[in-house]
Image (cartoon, rainbow, N blue to C red; front, side, top):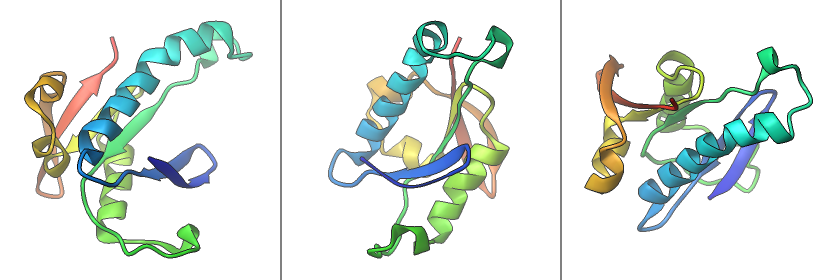
Length: 127
């Protein structure tokens, strides 16, 4: 995957290829899994200010531009809306399109949660 852009406390990464969906989800599960270690060992903030992540993931399309900051698409906007409206701190919110692209062994980590813009949202919450 590749981070296309980052603004303040949010960004967008893109994965492509045959295994893009499972690889991107496994990457984000790994990031969330490491977060407690980071907060203990690396985070210089007070414990009440531990880093927390909200992750929205969607499978869709965008037209590539050399200046990735100028890229936009309905699918990119939907991924942002998932993060903003469906993801809780230390969770991953998947669109139904993304969820359907995952193998069963990855799907079983997610539970149906809500709907957003007519799409079922599936969630993983770090415990």
